[in-house]
Length: 382
Ligand code: GTQ
Ligand code: FE2
Image 1 (cartoon, rainbow, N blue to C red):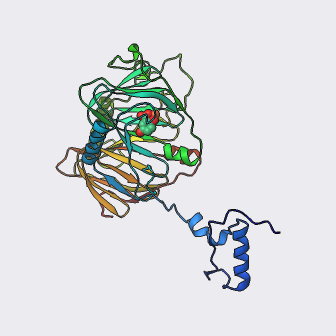
Image 2 (cartoon, rainbow, N blue to C red):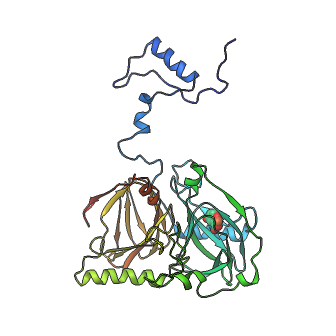
Image 3 (cartoon, rainbow, N blue to C red):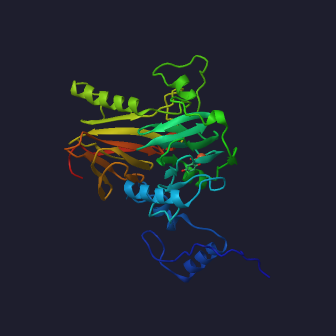
């Protein structure tokens, strides 16, 4: 009796003539059936898909409107409780080309999270790196290793993997914010660990201080506590406040007007959130930036390895991603797949178009697989 593979090959090789390949023949058929039986796949039938000349993203450019995200999150707030097990009332953007999985891009999770007045999301920790960004509202404190951090419009809160965290709405209104995590990356690379923490925060953690311990220690530009000279993989500064981000962007544009070449291109200022212990990205796997395009100005068109998710923080304008073009406004979120070109244009009647951006770039930089191409000069049509 011959031993055969119990699992049929999912790959059906077909002996179709293609450039540089042999003509179909009984011998070729027999060879391919032999490959199938032994779970073997030759490179020559797969190479175009496996090793394309440039990244061919499975993800599509896509836009989600903020008013709909908020409406549905609010509906969830009224129907779906938050607590141990489900952990978070977080609703993820599912890229239409990624098979219905809750992935904005092949590596990045992007979700709207919602807490009703007085609600708590229970403590847990995981190896996935995370951040929160607030496009509007206030009243929620996130508690990271017992440090309570206020969240208000324009604030950016990074949270490196394996730190305990819970969220608490101390206000009388519901509040929404967005989460970015490397959940899909962690899923595909089979590297996830997760632990439940306490179900309830203690009294000392339910206080709502104006500034967290982390900001009191780290939130002073150019000043480092001399007791803290070790470089850490994620930022120890747990909130980057809008007043600072806003001023940095305004000053960049003002300096440009005074004749100093400090912007990315005419009318396009940008800042990156960085880890004060080493000047690198705030999280090992996620890059985060805020971009400001002055009314009437546009960014250069560029494409790069790795995927991004944007949220419009303020203003209105037109964004072009690959073959797609959208008119966008506050809160709208969109995806830029790997190697798809991106360009943004601020409407002339707006002060500016402010765009919050996060991407998986640090992964590719660490692997020396990052490439960027600026494809069009400012203002020219794509
Ligand atoms: O707030 O802890 O959107 O663990 C996904 C996973 C949020 C969180 C998400 C999470 C969280
Ligand atoms: Fe979490």
